[in-house]
Length: 114
Image (cartoon, rainbow, N blue to C red):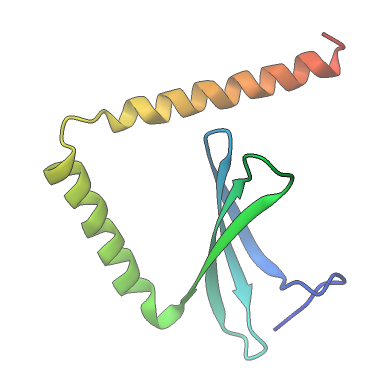
């Protein structure tokens, strides 16, 4: 696998999903020596009483993409339709967007010395 100067794997694509104050999900596409690609899903959670983060990773290989995606979608649909049909999933997205905007504004105010 390819390595950068710090000995970590190089990602050819990275996306992240912030999930509240303490949790972030990362989606990294990495390349093998054989010119193949795989996905690394990482959950990073800030520790409560210590510095640093806990990280959990799942490595997903191309031969499993379709089955993984189909089962993930089926599982999400089961929760949304059968287990929690009254939950407002759009409201959660709105609250997350509002929280992220407040954090950006807080950072801007700190930059201005407020």
